[in-house]
Image (cartoon, rainbow, N blue to C red):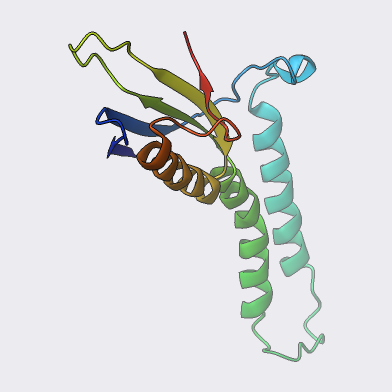
Length: 150
């Protein structure tokens, strides 16, 4: 998502955000920056699917479910439980937010602020807050996620 904002001092700022597919390496997560691969995630997903199939197949015929005899609701609940984790993963991805002025040609220095925000809804809130800060103060707020880059 890209947005162009006019600052209070007349400069044009470009605010853009981009989802990161890998966790950005920071000083805070030094021990967790080594990736062991995606094989374990696929093995666990296959194990959950196999256990769900065994659960449905192993139900005796004389078991009466209060909602339906064909166990449609149980299958739907199992599918929702399996889809919960990929949906959570997609909604909680880190986003890189960049606010920059570009080269104006007026002799004014180029400014660039960069930060990381986690979550789709949070990044929208932060971009709106950064936009308002630029319109009022001509720069992103210091208490926000963005930090100036030299």
